[in-house]
Image 1 (cartoon, one colour):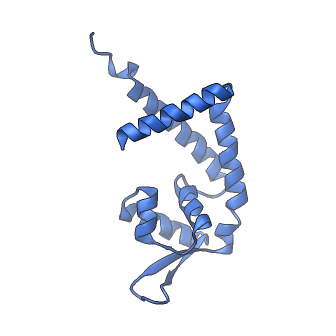
Image 2 (cartoon, rainbow, N blue to C red; image 1 turned 45 degrees about the vertical axis):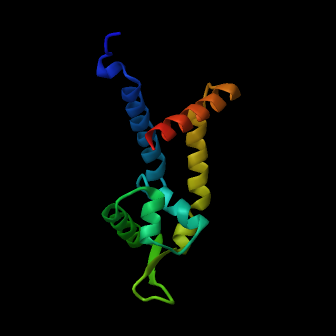
Amino acid sequence: MPEKPMQETMCCLIVQVCKAHRHQTATVLTQLGLHPGQEILLLYLWENDGLIQSELASLMQVEAPTLTKMIHRMEKAGLLERRKDEEDARICRIYLTDGGRSLQEPVTSAWNLLEKRVLANLTLEERLLFRRLLLQVLNNLS
């Protein structure tokens, strides 16, 4: 069987979907004063405030310099703050400010709206199959 041109591959389609999703996400997050990726950092802190940078980097699957830049930007925006660990001053923990906590409801609403947009026109069966297939693809790539 001859190979497909790159633009006809599933991988190319995945890239297109990711780009479209990122664009939609950026549009929604910009209205909340956030950049793409920052909502994920907030999510982890909403679940477990006071994580250290290495824990966040691991959870978010990003490199330390990327996270450092993100934290600095969010700190300047008043969404989080760095504090020394009470037991080990060498460790710096990341905590939400009131500003960061106040974004939980609007970010969650925006994320749910985006999910509805992504899954529009899919039946429940198709949604369940889509989820199963995405999890399998993720497993294949992990």
